[in-house]
Length: 226
Image 1 (spheres, one colour):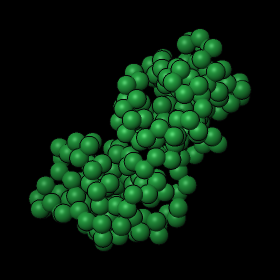
Image 2 (cartoon, helix red, strand yellow; image 1 turned 90 degrees about the vertical axis):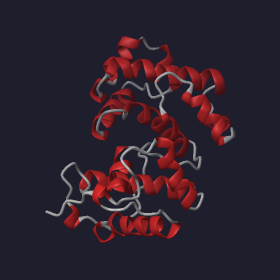
Image 3 (spheres, one colour; image 1 turned 135 degrees about the vertical axis):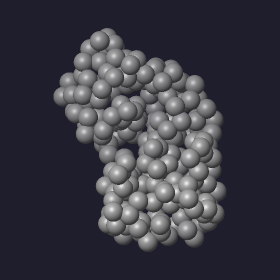
């Protein structure tokens, strides 16, 4: 199996042409991924909180528990005890911590925006991002996931798969910050919610199927870009 060792090769200069070529190759392989799964923007927000440090299938189980109790509502969750909420979201792991973080988000959502998604969407991107980052338990990846997937804001989400795929293709060094990686995509790609949405989803799919810790480069759609 061919293993790429990016540190032995010079770093590539990102460009719109290169990044769009990578996207088109992924899109041909996977089709449009229609990510993030969720019936409502609020469900997407909950999923973004619960997916921290766990697989998506576990998040689906937790959300299913909330739905079965007719509890996938900010006001219903707000009225729950932390222990009961933790029990419902147990499949997502770290359930006590996540229950607190989810309640923090919901308190912010209800207090600041009265639980109104349309009102939240009217706020400018970076003002809203700052507000989300002030909520205890929300980091940059979670905030940006909420912004692009639940609120249709044009911002690029960076995660471990993004870092791994782009590092192995020599567009990143090992020590790039979240902001630096995000800036690469947002500087060189057209400003588009739909593109940012699906590009990130495509990178996640590449990371899960091919660009694993032990990479499967020979069958990866991005093999021609190595």
